[in-house]
Length: 131
Image 1 (cartoon, one colour):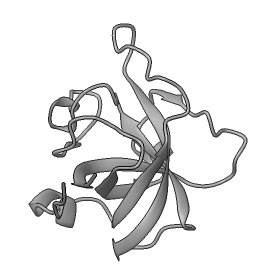
Image 2: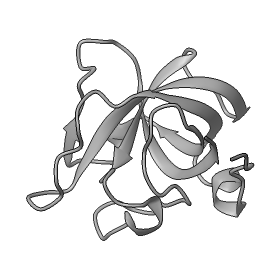
Image 3: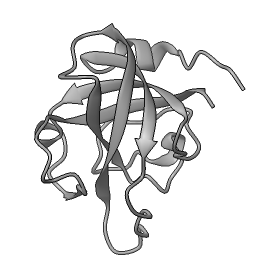
Image 4: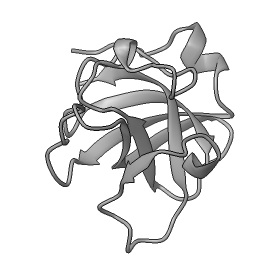
Protein backbone atom coordinates (compact mmCIF):
# COMPACT_ATOMS: atom_id res chain seq x y z
CA UNK A 1 0.00 0.00 0.00
CA UNK A 2 1.49 3.33 -1.04
CA UNK A 3 0.08 6.73 -0.19
CA UNK A 4 1.53 10.20 0.14
CA UNK A 5 0.44 10.96 3.68
CA UNK A 6 -0.05 14.63 2.84
CA UNK A 7 -2.94 16.82 3.87
CA UNK A 8 -3.34 20.45 4.86
CA UNK A 9 -2.57 19.82 8.54
CA UNK A 10 0.64 17.80 8.16
CA UNK A 11 2.03 20.38 5.73
CA UNK A 12 1.15 23.43 7.85
CA UNK A 13 1.12 22.46 11.54
CA UNK A 14 4.27 22.26 13.64
CA UNK A 15 7.64 23.73 12.78
CA UNK A 16 9.02 20.45 11.37
CA UNK A 17 7.63 18.05 8.77
CA UNK A 18 9.24 14.69 8.06
CA UNK A 19 8.72 11.26 6.56
CA UNK A 20 10.13 8.61 8.87
CA UNK A 21 10.02 4.84 9.38
CA UNK A 22 8.89 3.55 12.77
CA UNK A 23 11.83 1.43 13.95
CA UNK A 24 10.40 -0.23 17.02
CA UNK A 25 7.81 -0.21 19.77
CA UNK A 26 9.91 -1.21 22.80
CA UNK A 27 7.00 -2.48 24.92
CA UNK A 28 3.23 -2.83 24.46
CA UNK A 29 1.35 0.42 24.98
CA UNK A 30 -0.32 0.55 28.41
CA UNK A 31 -4.10 1.03 28.54
CA UNK A 32 -5.54 4.54 28.69
CA UNK A 33 -7.91 3.77 31.55
CA UNK A 34 -5.80 5.30 34.34
CA UNK A 35 -4.24 8.37 32.74
CA UNK A 36 -3.32 10.04 29.47
CA UNK A 37 0.29 9.73 28.43
CA UNK A 38 2.77 10.35 25.64
CA UNK A 39 4.84 7.37 24.49
CA UNK A 40 8.30 7.87 22.98
CA UNK A 41 8.86 5.99 19.71
CA UNK A 42 12.08 5.69 17.70
CA UNK A 43 12.00 6.65 14.02
CA UNK A 44 14.49 6.67 11.16
CA UNK A 45 14.16 9.90 9.18
CA UNK A 46 13.74 9.31 5.44
CA UNK A 47 13.12 12.89 4.36
CA UNK A 48 12.85 16.29 6.03
CA UNK A 49 10.19 18.29 4.19
CA UNK A 50 10.57 21.45 6.30
CA UNK A 51 12.43 22.50 9.41
CA UNK A 52 15.35 20.56 10.91
CA UNK A 53 15.78 17.47 13.05
CA UNK A 54 18.77 16.42 15.11
CA UNK A 55 20.09 13.23 13.48
CA UNK A 56 18.81 10.43 11.27
CA UNK A 57 17.25 8.44 14.12
CA UNK A 58 14.95 10.51 16.32
CA UNK A 59 12.58 10.08 19.26
CA UNK A 60 8.95 11.18 18.85
CA UNK A 61 6.31 11.47 21.57
CA UNK A 62 2.92 10.18 20.41
CA UNK A 63 -0.01 11.07 22.65
CA UNK A 64 -2.25 8.16 23.74
CA UNK A 65 -0.88 5.82 21.05
CA UNK A 66 -3.60 3.17 21.45
CA UNK A 67 -6.08 5.57 19.86
CA UNK A 68 -6.27 6.33 16.13
CA UNK A 69 -4.71 9.75 15.55
CA UNK A 70 -8.10 11.11 14.40
CA UNK A 71 -9.55 10.52 17.90
CA UNK A 72 -6.47 11.05 20.10
CA UNK A 73 -7.08 14.77 20.63
CA UNK A 74 -8.68 15.78 23.92
CA UNK A 75 -8.84 18.74 26.29
CA UNK A 76 -5.30 18.03 27.53
CA UNK A 77 -3.41 17.39 24.28
CA UNK A 78 -3.85 20.57 22.29
CA UNK A 79 -4.32 20.28 18.54
CA UNK A 80 -3.10 16.84 17.45
CA UNK A 81 -4.44 14.34 14.94
CA UNK A 82 -3.86 12.58 11.66
CA UNK A 83 -5.02 9.70 9.52
CA UNK A 84 -2.88 6.99 11.15
CA UNK A 85 -5.09 4.24 12.59
CA UNK A 86 -2.46 2.19 14.47
CA UNK A 87 1.29 2.13 15.05
CA UNK A 88 3.10 -0.72 13.28
CA UNK A 89 6.85 -1.21 13.15
CA UNK A 90 8.17 -0.66 9.62
CA UNK A 91 5.44 1.73 8.49
CA UNK A 92 6.43 5.15 7.18
CA UNK A 93 4.70 8.11 8.80
CA UNK A 94 4.43 11.67 7.52
CA UNK A 95 4.53 13.82 10.63
CA UNK A 96 4.28 17.43 11.68
CA UNK A 97 6.43 17.88 14.79
CA UNK A 98 7.41 20.40 17.43
CA UNK A 99 10.53 20.38 19.60
CA UNK A 100 10.70 19.56 22.39
CA UNK A 101 7.89 17.53 23.97
CA UNK A 102 8.51 19.32 27.29
CA UNK A 103 7.22 22.55 25.72
CA UNK A 104 3.95 20.92 24.59
CA UNK A 105 3.02 18.17 27.05
CA UNK A 106 3.26 18.37 30.84
CA UNK A 107 1.66 14.99 31.63
CA UNK A 108 3.01 11.47 31.84
CA UNK A 109 5.68 10.37 29.37
CA UNK A 110 6.76 6.77 28.88
CA UNK A 111 10.31 6.86 27.53
CA UNK A 112 12.04 3.49 27.25
CA UNK A 113 14.97 5.35 25.63
CA UNK A 114 15.61 7.57 28.65
CA UNK A 115 19.28 6.54 28.74
CA UNK A 116 19.78 7.75 25.16
CA UNK A 117 20.43 11.45 24.64
CA UNK A 118 18.44 13.40 22.11
CA UNK A 119 15.51 15.71 21.59
CA UNK A 120 12.07 14.23 22.19
CA UNK A 121 9.83 15.67 19.48
CA UNK A 122 6.08 16.17 19.98
CA UNK A 123 3.92 14.67 17.22
CA UNK A 124 1.29 17.21 16.22
CA UNK A 125 -0.03 15.37 13.17
CA UNK A 126 0.71 11.78 12.04
CA UNK A 127 -0.42 10.26 8.75
CA UNK A 128 0.39 6.89 7.23
CA UNK A 129 2.64 7.42 4.23
CA UNK A 130 3.32 3.79 3.29
CA UNK A 131 3.39 0.28 4.66
